Length: 187
Image 1 (cartoon, rainbow, N blue to C red):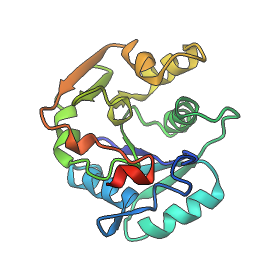
Image 2: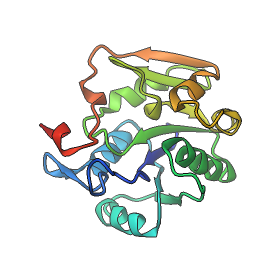
Image 3: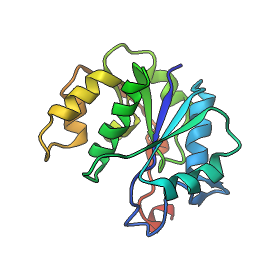
Image 4: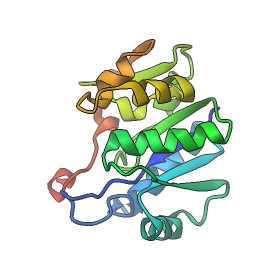
């Protein structure tokens, strides 16, 4: 299995607090995502964070897991696309060729999603339930990094990822893709 990159660097403005460490059904969201990745075979997990404070907070809830590394966002721009670009630059510097992306705010994600994405061979393997899930893609680091660096500022992350050879993997049950952006999403 490929290493995983949990995207946890967002500001969580709509939530008003760090989503990654929010407890859902008794377990912090990022722990639920990390366990799904581990259960799918990802032994090495990288976590992209915004700053040192966020890293310390997330480290406290992931301390029970071994082989977790943290990547600080060093991009001046603050967006999901720039955070991913910054993290993938670091992955490329580490020699990682392919990596499984996973946002920290999908607490119901299941291991079989990651397992099915491994079956394809395109540079981007993107899951789709009711809609595309670009932040849950299995990606070739250098291919996606080149696309991100060449993309127009206003181009969406989904369109940027779809601009490279991409395979869409359909999932009938989309409930595991549900993400949490605001307190009302927990209802």
